Each structure stands twice: as structure tokens, then as C-alpha cells.
Length: 207
Length: 73
Image (cartoon, rainbow over all chains, first blue to last red; front, side, top):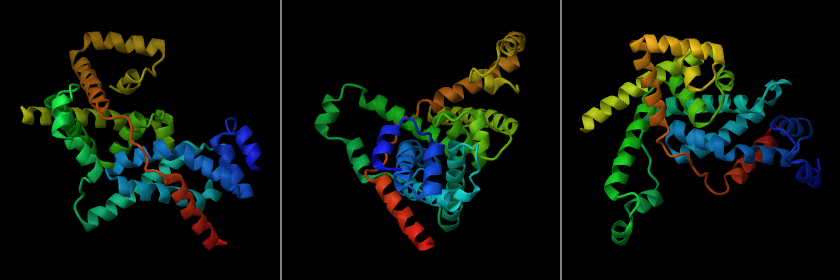
């Protein structure tokens, strides 16, 4: 596939066609386009899953490396998206297990991010929306929600993130996690009730 | 409540949704459980939507894949 044809046909090519073009013809432009399409959603998923931007980048790269290694397993008629998220989830689970064996999981905060969050005195004085106290409250609330999501069992957490944050349908989530649809629904139900309990508990503790 | 999740995601057909809503009106326990599910979803939506990938992620990923592909051939 030439550069010109990729550019003109780009919008019409499906993810599956791009992957097929890479797999059968070694088309690197198609591969780059596929990576580009999933750059934001897959990276976001991995950051949410592992809570660490550096690890998320490594997992992102590892996911595509595994995709290529397993390209022969991708059968016709299958869809890339759930397959890709399934591989990413396995990579993330492996990484979490390795990290848990090495040391307790730490929440990483980028220097730049923490600096910008602190802001200057002038910014604090002039920052009208939202008020610092409201912002702090919101950030505390978000941290509690993140902690609650993070404390869910592995197979519940991946369902919550895929189904709610990444917008996969329940059927796609089931396919990605190689889990029956009924089990996905049941686990999502239990996960949401557990989140409600955990968040309600943290709210009460904060009062 | 087996259909609670589908109800929340608006995935139920009209008949099933109507049946569930009738049941909900008659069963305060189920209603309370659905409220808990809805509150959990509302909390999840409080988290920031966007996470911006680092610049050059696509290029670095492709570079790593090229190295891996060269090793295989």
C-alpha cells in the first residue's frame, strides 16, 4: 500500500483492514496508523489500570509487541478492538503481579503535574473557578474513587474501566476479557455495589 | 437484579424495561439497589475524562516494534 493510497483511503480503512495490510504485506504505514488510532484510548486505559504513566507507556508498547507476536492468532472476522484491549489487560495484570512481588504499589505523581497543581500564590488569589477549597475537595473525592476502583478485584476492575471509561460495549468487554457476557454483567453489578460501599465508607470517614 | 446493569446502560428492550420498572415500583429493596448502582456510576463519572499520551508515543512504539521485527527475521 503506497503512502498516497493510505492517505486517500485512510478514513475508509477499518482497523482490521489496516492490521491485515500489515500482517500480509508488512505495511508499516498501516501499522503506524493503527497505533495512532489507539494511542489515546489505549494509553488512557493503561494509565487508569495501573495508575502510573511511565508503566503505562511501557505497557502500551508491550501490548503492540504482543499483538505482532500473536498476529497469526488473529482470525478472520474477529475485531481488533476487543482483541487489543484483551492483550493490554493481560499485560497490565502481569505487570501488576510483578510489581506486587517486588514492592507495594506506589502512586506516581509527575513533578510537572504536582508543580502545576500547587500553582503560585498569585494564581491561588486570582483563581476563581473552582475555589481552592472546592478543588481540594474534588481532588480528594477523585482520589477516593480512584482508590476504590484500584482496590477492586482484578477481574472486576478491568470490566469497570473498559465498560465505563473506555466505552466498550458489554459484548466487547466480554470478548476482550474472554469472559461470558453474563459473567461480565454480574461482575459489573457486584463491582458497582462494592464501589458504592467503599465510596460511601470513605465519605463517612471524611466527615 | 439481573437486568440492573442493562437498565442503567439503556440496553433493555421496551417490554423488559417496563416490566423492570413495574417491579422497581413494588420493591423498595430493588429500588435501593438500583440507586446504589446509579450513585456508583455517578461517582465514576467524577473522574477526569482525559489522559494525554506523552509526545512521541506512536513513534517510540513503532521503533520498538521495528527492532523486534528485525530480530525475528
